[in-house]
Amino acid sequence: MSTTTSEGTPDATAPAADEVRWLTAEQQRHWRAWRDGSALLLDALGRELDAQSGLSLAEYEILVRLSEAPGRTLRMSELAGDLAHSRSRLTHTVARLERAGIVRREPAPGDARGVNCVMTDHGWDVLVAAAPGHVRSVREHLVDRLTDAQLAALGEAMQVVVDHLRSPGCTQARAEADGPAPAA
Image (cartoon, rainbow, N blue to C red; front, side):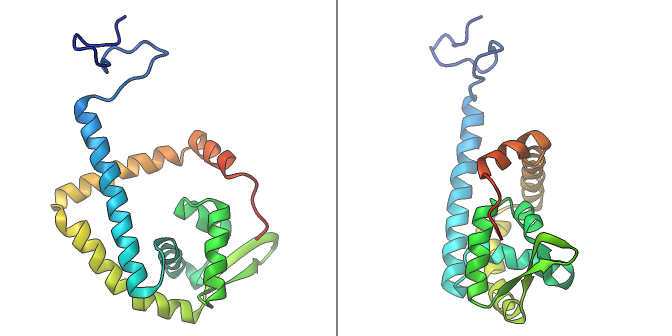
């Protein structure tokens, strides 16, 4: 079976079982728009958040997740999974927040190995101060650029990707790449 078109480019419609299914020109255009848009968006949001509050996007997201949890407390393992961060990255980020008095780590009740991350009152104040500027940036660079239908389609499409990447087969690959859990 031929895997190239008459122009000599890969034929995305006729791959052999062991061959690459190349992206069509339209798929490539959409992939690059998502990749470039995501990189530019995250860079802009990160720079603006840092300038306004001194927080990184990762630090801000940790505080948001803690603010939504009962008692502003989550197990470190749950927090890592919620944020799709490696345990190592989360440990380093939480350590920075802990040094600033924004969070504290405590043993998980009833689990000698478990560690909870708890937002402090100072952490709450930091989040409350940072949130309005960050929300304005998210609106300016994403939400207000799209129609409601475009935003819904984007959210639905990315949820499909999230669900796939968090499925057992993909989770195992991510866990293996993450290495052993560091002592928290």
